[in-house]
Image (cartoon, rainbow, N blue to C red; front, side, top):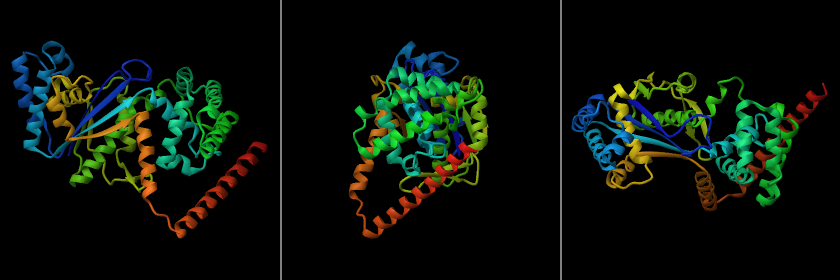
Amino acid sequence: MWIYADESGNTGKDIFVNPQGYFSGTILSVAPIDQIVEPVLQRFRSEEQVAEIHASDLARAVGAAKVGEIGEALIDALDGATKWSFSATAIHKPYLATTKFVDTIFDNGENLAVRPQWYIHEFFRHAICCAIDDMLTLRNRERYWAAFLSGNQGELTASVRNALTYLDRVVKDRRLHTVIRDALQFAIRHVDQFTLPRGRRAYRDHTPNMVAFSTIMNAAHEFAKEHGVTPQAFYHDEQTEFGASMRESYRMFSRFRWRETGWMAMPEHAGYDLGKFDMPSSKSFPPLQAVDVLLWILARENKSGVEAVNEKLKERTDPNFISRSTSELICLGWHAKLARIPLTDQQLGDARLQVEGIERRTLDRVRDFAHSLKA
């Protein structure tokens, strides 16, 4: 299989500037698509007398309908030549500050006040995300993000303390209130226990670009598994700021995929990587021009002129969303799922034993930590 990825939207560490949406799109194909899309693109390049097809430029020059026409021709060409799908990721950039706050402060590997299930279980983690999102003012959200990226422990502590002042008025569920309170109080007292970015370029691994890059790799593994194919090549549009980070992330994680267990995702070794990784310029690489067209159609808020092709593309798209509304939907989904699951006395008894075991191990860690502070 072959992987072709592009991105759209302002990128980098300034996640609070407009536009607040960041999008990435990936064509996943059983066969290489160079010879499939090039005749389509060449026809429209000749018609419009341009050197390359760039969706936003073309839309400004001749209108969105022309981009829609190109998109429909590309979809038809791909449909007729190969098995393929389009993986799309949409990120509400300001929400990354919330998710990173939770990933930092509620990581049970570093915060001894957090029991593992509250960080590992999808339902609990997203419930915490929603609560923290309500507890962070815009000013404090920006303060936390700057403190985290710079590794400033003093400013990070101040942002956590500020968030804690909103706990009583925001979180009414007693157990969730206790979990958040204990976690934040531990972070305030022991901020030195948390791993923060270090170095001038360390922020790059936490940007929308790199978050989306990880979803591309996972989508590629899912496609390979579904179709029983092995990746041959992975092309991402040329990068300046994030090229080195993407290459390093590919080197470290391209052989791993996520396996769903019913209540959480676990990493497992795939037994293969995602093929030769390269970052050519879309100006000279037609497959990336095709991705640009399809991503522009899907990410465009005003669908005027591209309504039909947008619906056609959505039928072939596997979407990924990172936003507050996504966290809320995940929580609602778990509420419905849990309400339908009958629990036997045996299952409830086993659950109590598991919780008691988690509590014993947590208290042992706390005792060891207390002894280390006295040593």
